[in-house]
Image (cartoon, rainbow, N blue to C red; front, side):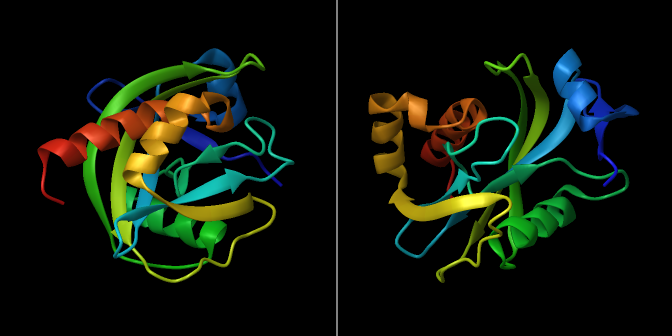
Length: 175
């Protein structure tokens, strides 16, 4: 299977090139990404535990799904595609905000992303793709915040950063 490219961008989210995903993470080059947060009608967040065979951050808990846009693909279309590929369902997504972050991993790779954060609502159980997702659960947003402080080692590096931005966005905005 051919490795996917990521879209290299500048700080204004303007495309400046393409690069294989692994190379971009090895070189810590800024690229476009997205993070999807799915909530239910109890205001609980759907978390996924990454599959054990993932090349980085296996078995760690993270937001509902996240990945990279393909060239020519809108943020919403990319989020919907990946949500279905990983979690097995479709729902309407809304983009909330974007920001830039940089997060190094223990294995020498680095996430340096201009991340588009999206929200959606869903009340059923997902049908997870076992190649991508080990497990899933619902947690209240407040319980996630507290558990992340007590057990930070259980969560992906990027989720700790993105969740903090998401949490503060929810404090300041009606979604």
